Image 1: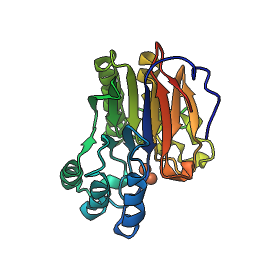
Image 2: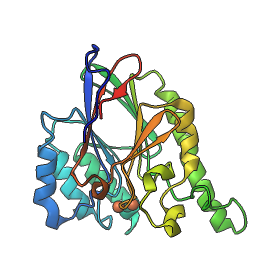
Image 3: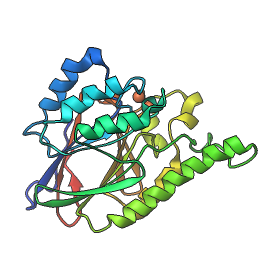
Length: 258
Ligand SMILES: [Fe+2]
Ligand SMILES: [Fe+2]
């Protein structure tokens, strides 16, 4: 997709960010996944992976991704998704992913310099919790209140992380679960509480990163906004493509070209 770029004539380096969520690797798709990543050479400066890296969370599945990234020569940052937790082998997954050179972020920040530009990334899986009309309450059984508390830990991590990278020229929020329902249009209304929560939106609205990306909502829509911040659902089924490429020109206020 493309759009008019009102800043095209202005000076400043451009950073090319490839983003995708819900790749759902498995051995049967090895060749196409390796080819999709190889096609990023010379095209992208940075890769953001918005969770659901695997189909069931098996180490053999994530090895496909690790092999695709190992010699890529482009920094890759990722968060896990709910599928990656399914068989509860996350510590093993993390070892395999790190062996592939993938930087895993779980309520963490990372900084790097890309094309001479200081980049900061805050990554968290996020969690369920709902949106206006579907919010889970912080009330009642301890188990339900723990679900709410787990979401609150993500909110606090985003706030803390965005403060830490405040001086970076480009600042990205990387999530699996959605921080706004604007990118959920097309999803079944009955499952909204399980697609994310707008409680994640508060630190994004306050700290105004360059952009936020998420996945998880396979039937949602591509573009939304939290205050001034563009939010993109980069779930592969939404993109209809292996990756979305954001070309970000760094100036006083970095502006998405598309
Ligand atoms: Fe998914
Ligand atoms: Fe998911």
